[in-house]
Length: 196
Ligand SMILES: NC(=O)c1ccc[n+]([C@@H]2O[C@H](COP(=O)([O-])OP(=O)(O)OC[C@H]3O[C@@H](n4cnc5c(N)ncnc54)[C@H](OP(=O)(O)O)[C@@H]3O)[C@@H](O)[C@H]2O)c1
Image (cartoon, rainbow, N blue to C red; front, side, top):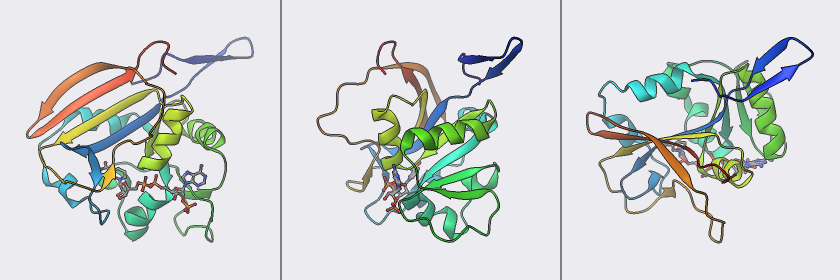
């Protein structure tokens, strides 16, 4: 799905710009990982899911929080289980030596600059943002264009919250999709007009 945002460059070139896309699987009680950062429960629901397929198809680049990278991708895990490949930017205050993976770049810049870089690399497709802390910063900066949450039928009780920002101004959303795939409930949202 392409953003309706477009940028006119020069006199005749119209360059489409993708959205910043927040995509996560959440327990019914609002967690995206358990207290030990485990996410194995996410992969327990295996029904075909067109909403997830579309997310994969429309992703052009990924911005990953360093903790998410350390928990998954650095241990051989792949974005979308290997069903997607492309430029991946890992945001960290302490970039290690360059990655062996030519698709992975460690970056140490403000969230706005990181998102701009990711969108450019996405070449008109969406920039997927993964990790709670990095997503929170994107929301606070008014950068998120669309949200897809899969609600899994499980209670974790504790862990990494989908979103937490005490004292934040309300951000109103519009639900644009409600669907199911086996035991998973899909909910898609965009920011309500005037919210960001
Ligand atoms: N269920 C799901 O769908 C799902 C999806 C994604 C992630 N997860 C889980 O969520 C957990 C990780 O989320 P998280 O919120 O703890 O961490 P995160 O957002 O993945 O990463 C946070 C880290 O990113 C770096 N960072 C963030 N903003 C930065 C900035 N502006 N400049 C420089 N560096 C920045 C910092 O790393 P440094 O300390 O290196 O500076 C920070 O500690 C993991 O358990 C992961 O498995 C679950």
